[in-house]
Image 1 (cartoon, rainbow, N blue to C red):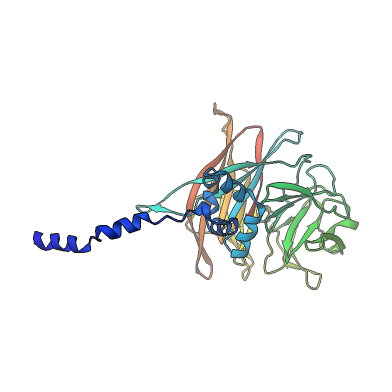
Image 2 (cartoon, rainbow, N blue to C red):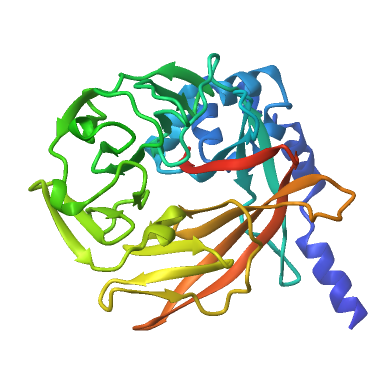
Length: 381
């Protein structure tokens, strides 16, 4: 038996002359390729690896920092969902801090999901205003920040997630505070936060121009402040809730309709749409989904209760990402708050049942007690 194994080993080994010829051949170096080819390769690499790759050499750092790389990723279809969020001071100053959060692609080790993430601070707008919680909208790789928090402004700020730079957008037709905004078919619809005459307007992303729209009318009793809008299009329509009823606005024909004679105001405060199903993260720490046939909110099965605090949920590549703050208790010596993040896979098992499975759960940021987690936006870059 040992002789046979020895003979086999001798047969499989290449001749010495072949070994020398192989070792003498120069290896092709990635750095020897032109920038265009290196860019094509880097565009196929997960963004999670970019921080480490940028340290390899100055050339990699330059290519990874270039907005052109993200254009190539878009053209190749290799963009990935990424979360952008900010925390702000509870005081009356304008202190803000923005971050980008990347979740590491799911990996398993002996069947266990690895918990890891990358959190990077990003620059703030040079001349910030106190921003509105409900009017930050993602458009492609841009984030539109619309209106003011506690102060009227018609200003628009736009953050480019590819180049990490801010620019001014076109001013609205009216100054607003606490407005609501939603993106539908490459147009941003903004409502509320001003007088009734300028209650509703739309921004055409392509032309960067605003146009006033007719308000729902007095019969709909939609107040300027007491409204909430789902941040994503639901069945291609704008879904709005007042304190009394739920409404939809059809952009194609400009018609408002009452769809539910019971308010989803609380549910829409923190909501999103995934695969044309509306989800809500509300007190007391449960995530629900909207049964559009029965016109009722149902609880997701299989999920444990999450922590209380300021909440946000988003569609991140077809999965639900929830973020919230955990504030210190009254008797706690540690006066820090913690920002948590959870990634949840969803599955519709029966007609009236949706099950969730938490794939990732972690604390992603520690902040002073005087700061609060205010807004999160999901962007593909």
